[in-house]
Amino acid sequence: FFQAEDGIRDYKVTGVQTCALPIFAEDLAVLDHLSHGRAEVLLLGGYLQSEFTMFGADPAERGRLMEECVRTLKQAWTGESFSFRGRTARVRPVPLQQPHPTLVMGGSSKAAAKRAAREGDAFVGGVPSLNPVYAEECARLGRRPRFQAEMAHGDRKSTRLNSSHLVISYAVFCLKKK
Image 1: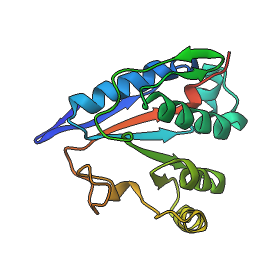
Image 2 (image 1 turned 90 degrees about the vertical axis):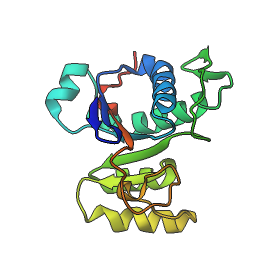
Image 3 (image 1 turned 60 degrees about the vertical axis):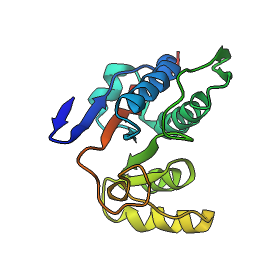
Image 4 (image 1 turned 120 degrees about the vertical axis):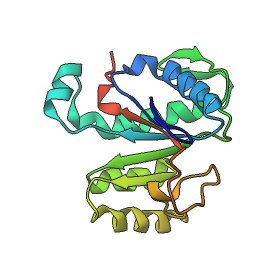
């Protein structure tokens, strides 16, 4: 944890296998309670070949894994039973923020920007030229584009990132289907 003067600011999570996604969802829900509803999850697809090799992951699977991760987190955070890879799972507690903590999706491709518009609550692009791609896809879907710097204070409308906001970074490249 990095402790800011007015609270927890940054907590990074990496190295969790996909078989642990329901556990990851539960851990995030607990962190949301511990931070008094200030959790913000940053999901990243990864980009270093050495990391993909280390986890036995295929970089071409990033998009599918990101979508599976978001879908699993959202299902888990309902508190109801759901199927995860053929097994029944149920996560408790549910997050303090409802329906769930902010899901910021990051990436450095047009596909990642469009995926963030479809699946996430906000976007942080690896390159500034992706912001218009994200905004256009949001407009096409009838959604308001939101960028990470706009997500703060728990109201999902603020224009500044509060230093007491809890940010959880999760590199999805770590996820490998067995």
